[in-house]
Length: 138
Image (cartoon, rainbow, N blue to C red; front, side, top):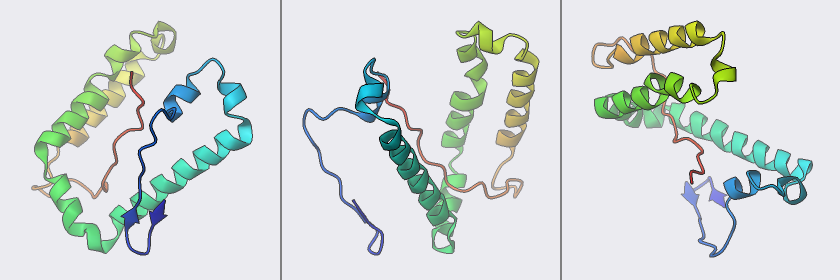
């Protein structure tokens, strides 16, 4: 539950509850997660993401955005995890990589140029604050 008027989010630990990831990857996902229900989850996640980006872009968060933008260690980690390693991950899926390696390498190169720019030098446009990935892990 989110009480946006007061910026309060109420969370509850429900023992033995199934995670969304465990349901989605389950062989019985179609029986558990019908299309209307799945769509409502997708819309709710999308709404949360839109609200998050709107909130982080608002003027009261300018100082927070500046502090995060200047966190060089996290910028480097984000670059490494996202752009420096994705081609190696795609090597596990040769059908996806086949015929597209040059394009993927160009994307990686463009990302490296963008991540090399520093906030202190005023080279970086305000990309806004990003959230963590939705990852269920194993």
